[in-house]
Image (cartoon, rainbow, N blue to C red):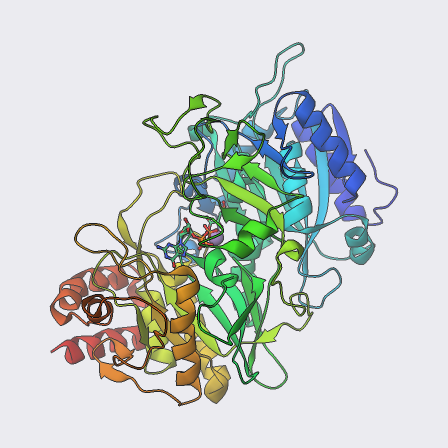
Length: 595
Ligand code: GTP
Ligand code: SPV
Ligand code: MN
């Protein structure tokens, strides 16, 4: 039960208690080695949980249970002693009560299974910005994914030492095995028994019942966003649902950009885009999470706490995102993708459909089938180091200095291609009112418009009213060093449902305008919602975009925005006296500008 490599008595004690509670058949301390990964994968292949892919070395396909295909926001809890601490946007159950419910579920929940202890680091091991977590799980699939998504192993135990701090993350799929009982290929608990729980006041994570993505890989959303956002507020930094990229101009000037778009709204794609404009270069630093702190020079520095990509598969192709396609050539895990007859993966939007595949439910599929071959939230897990344009500075302990912050969302109508905020307060207003159509990244309805402030609605580990205030306070501290803020929408559609903007690599045209705005080198026109490019300010060289489409993309429809004001008011009203006065002032100013 004990590990000879773990000098940390508190950790040893916690593992002992977890084992007494969950009653696993065996305990395995993960060392993060390739041999460990290979052994676990071989075991999963043997029992039919994983399928090796002939076309991609050291890569495997998994099919999850159809009930366990995405995050479960309805079953996700931010548990503080007082509900007000969790705020109006989070599910809340009082800690003692929630722990009582979950302790009952955890009792004997690992029977017949191995309990894995995964020491991991978010951020480079030993970096002053890194945080150590330890995940206890009964899922070997989780172990292999954590190997890719985080830094796992003995090195972490060494840094932890005898009395270092770690964030305990207890996870069980919630499917004990009775003696002789046959296992399923994706064991998990029914939806009403799933709990993704956070106790930010004590830096504790308890997850039960799901084996999928952010529900189960607890370093990601649970630690690096929900717990970290609460820690960040206390300590004066920021944990955000943001990509990080470096853009280099033909003159060699570097710009660092972070972007917060809701789940499945384009972060991975923007993070590694190949610019279609000549001479500009993008390097990827992170595709989902940014931790940002003010550096000694007063600027805002960002690091990517993750080590891999857990990216949306559908829509990813050599046309849309070649750098992602190259990142997943080998050493990758695929979940809920289709399996081709020549032992490769396929998904909608990859390229021409094969004449036959096995779909994500394990059934025969042909292009005539009425269902999709890959689940809309099918994902790949790949080491970030395999991205051909990963920045040489992506693991720099101090991070990169941010020039531009982008907010955005998926809006078929109303919201133009790009707008620049007038100032930091206006930028915070843009982030706080961000709205987007829901996607398959969460179990629930898809395509419903909802406010998703800062793309953090599912990930903010404390009262979002306080979170808004924290953004203002960071801006006050940054002063003249504050990044410039922009709002984008790549997802405008025509009346016929076609994309108005080509997106992907062509988004570099919008990035270029932003950089030139930062340098005061390009024009823009003041509108009620912010500064938009004049026709001619965007570099559209080589792009065949009909003039009326460009007009539509850059139009500010004041009446349509006016029609949204009541919803913004209702949204703000939810926060009561936690709503910063500076946001109410911004809303009043917008109303005035709209006339
Ligand atoms: P999470 O990992 O869930 O946080 O998502 P993400 O924000 O990283 O989203 P991602 O980049 O994976 O994109 C999600 C979907 O949007 C994919 O199907 C992409 O193909 C599609 N997409 C991304 N960028 C664009 C774009 O510029 N235009 C269009 N039309 N689709 C895009
Ligand atoms: C998201 O939903 O924003 C993701 C995928 O990045 S998951 O890790 O499942 O949360
Ligand atoms: Mn995400």
